[in-house]
Image (cartoon, rainbow, N blue to C red):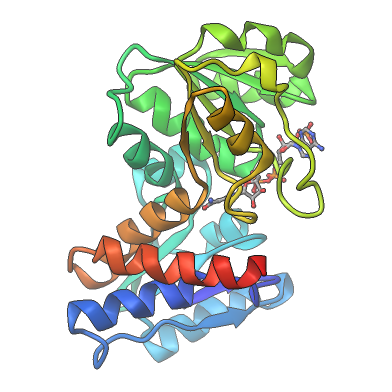
Length: 269
Ligand code: NAP
């Protein structure tokens, strides 16, 4: 199940259930969304234990607050400081974080991150997992954030340099640009975090915003001749890593991507 507040918009049930069906394990696993208010989180975790729920995905606002109720936190989730995945092994609840894989895996399908220059726009929750992931893979990280002090915090914690949005001109030198701000997402869908002229054809531009599917940033990046990666890829790959943790089966990538795309297309009409 996925727990969050709100959670009605979550695409995870469709993606995971399509995967269970394809993997032939739909008689063993079913994935649902549960709206859990912050003040009921402790009861929710007791319920997970009582009902022996195998796996739980955590989304906003529970990724940090749930940690204190778990028996064990995996080292990576500890470093990122947030849990998006709980696995229940006979009553022992372990917290993991697969968000970083959602960015690193799609990027590494295209290039090795080792010694590459990565610019990260944003320094919020998603950016933390991304900063961990790209630095862990050997990239040289530069973080740009509206509030520079938040970028400073991330750079100090994970490694890298911190700048405010006033210094975005230097972005031309990087190999990879990742947007981890909500700029481009509805209701900011006519906006872009980066002027079109700053994007060059040697860039790989990854926008983690997945609704709309093609953000203004990605459209303009494509127009500039850059390679683009859509936000759906992050959703998919963090979900595929969860699928493996929950079921120990390899996640069926194509069918899970198709389930997400179908839903995103429906939402955009
Ligand atoms: P968050 O913790 O609230 O962080 C938001 C970040 O964006 C902060 O660094 C904030 O800067 C910056 N920001 C907010 N509004 C801005 C604006 N108008 N102009 C410039 N910067 C702005 O949010 P989050 O959880 O990291 O999520 C960020 C985005 O990623 C959301 O759109 C979310 O939907 C998307 N996301 C996608 C996936 C996926 O699977 N594809 C996963 C997670 C998140 P300040 O510090 O200056 O406020």
